[in-house]
Length: 610
Image 1: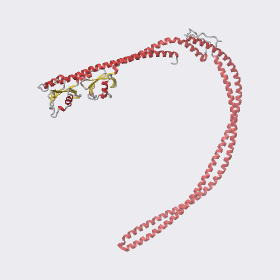
Image 2 (image 1 turned 30 degrees about the vertical axis):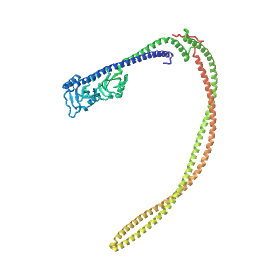
Image 3 (image 1 turned 90 degrees about the vertical axis):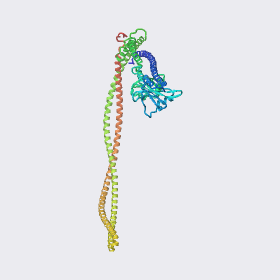
């Protein structure tokens, strides 16, 4: 689409206008955003300070009430004063701890015997501070409510009379905090300096770390928020919020307000959307105006374009002329086009005459080349047939020579292997004969063992007889002689078995020797026969190689002759093709020029730009 010059002009103008409008809208949006930030900050400051002052006033009133108990200490009106303070201040319990470890309460509660108020944190904290203090919030086990203890030291004439304390529920403070909603989804919470939640819309999170509300809300983050004069962005429950915190005087608490960003910046978001819609509407209006302004001027350019396209398509009418209206750039383009069309018409007329002459000459060249080409193709065909026959003969001879060479080599290999086999058989015969001699030696040794066993048996028998004659003194010797006879008998039996095995081995060895000798004789005969075959095949191989070389030389000569004929045929074919191509191009050129309507023809009316 951007290839159109008209579209590019309109797009450029539209882009500049839209950029200007976008810049204006962006600046307006930025100014409104800055103003909205200032409004959000003022809102947070006013809400935070108002509720901070209310919570501080609540804490101050509780301090004053517990401090008002001091005049009644040491008098009979102490308990009524405690009761009145509890009723007036909304305390759940008011009490007095004395240095002598007694605890006096407004409701008459008696502590355990081992209870020592002077060791309690509220007592020791107030004495150490020398002024009224407030404890950290804690959960009352009786009422199951959050309470805070206020304690003040009571001194008279420099002497400590005791510490008065009061437990007060945080219901009023929690209601105050929960009522803070600058927008419907905004909220507030109260936390101490350690990051522990004192009041929050989810009561289950009371006395838990502020990180339970959001992972990054630790004590350090809350301290940084309280010290920052500007709201701090954060995310709670998946929604963006602005955090603003103030310290509550007289306590260790911080009031934190979380302003919902989406609701607080709703006006800014609406302005942004309105700006976008305005840009789109402006773009449509500007596009329409640009179209109405630019289109008339481009119609005359389109007329020139159509005329040039008509000429480029091959059916152009070079006698056509564009109307010239005015003296602007478009009129100058029309004048230049008319001059161009006249010049082209003149040139094409000359080209038409020349192309006719070229076509006639190319026809004569093409006919002569075609005759020569047919004769050359016939000669080339005969040579190709001769070459194919010689290639077949050459292939057959080469295959024969190759087969003879391979057979000769196989015969030589077989002769060598048969010779080596004969040598192996001869060595095997010698080895078996040597083994036969060793077997006979073993047989002689076995016969010697039989004789030794026989003599040992006789000696053992004689020893047994002598031992029997000796009576009791020769009994042990008789036992030994009996064992010797048994060993001699076993040796004789073993020698018999060995003798039998050796006899069998000797017989088998002799038989193997005869067989190996027969195999050796057969192998020698095979070697002689293979040697004669190898000699014959070698002669055949030499003859086949010589025949293959002769056929190859003849085939090479025929191939060179065929190649020369093919080259001649190719050159003739190229000449013929060139002549035909020249004829075709001349015909095509004449047809192209004939497709234009020149000035010599009837002129058509001038083109209108309307």
